[in-house]
Length: 277
Image 1 (cartoon, rainbow, N blue to C red):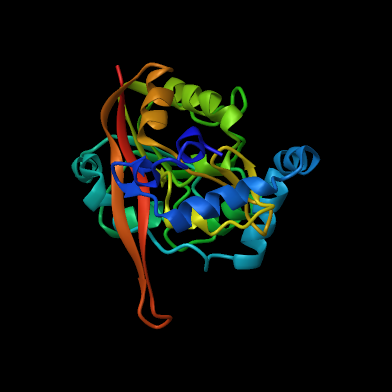
Image 2: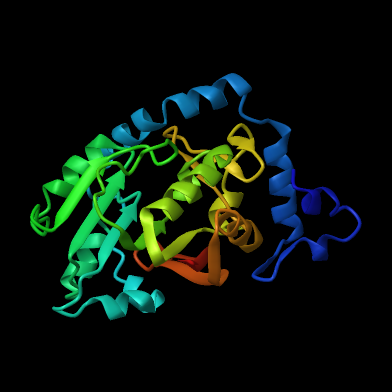
């Protein structure tokens, strides 16, 4: 249990952050999560089998699970300046999945000299390459583990913009620093990193039942994939520790709405922009 939640006995109203104050019910849910943690053996097995679980995820869901991210150019205005015909920028997406980020950019008319896309899942890369908008002349998609040295060996030129969108949360926190370092190294001077992921105390964090918490803010889903929930302070500190300059880092609040299923729930994400000096 986090220190803030653990000390909440005396004053529950002080638990949370600028984007979210926890209710007594939410505090109770987080305490319940701590009552039964994932065993060390199971946690180690999840790490060992991370690629297998994501391959099974994409085998089961194909391209249907994630919606295309048409919000990207609205949220990250850096991308709006990359769409001219004469532009020679190079884009790298880390954790590309089946292309829910890349292909909406192409549909919006943004052009790049080269697009690199990588994912841990071989199955995801196969699905991405089968998309009608995938063009091998300007796009290169490859499987890699971004927590390892030389993970970007296939990239043969400096990268101008790297995106890390709902990808870091699937990685064990012990490896966050190496991922940040690898991204810093692949970017050219002045390169930009665009980040978005699950925020601390997001609605989804409270849905985990006892037996699914691995460690602080890290959880196991039913399918064996994992999810981590970030604070803005943690993200800024992480990327600054490898040399990035923070341009912007904050919580953003959105709503997940599904009228057909009568769903309307608040969401909390961390969104940030970093620059390589």
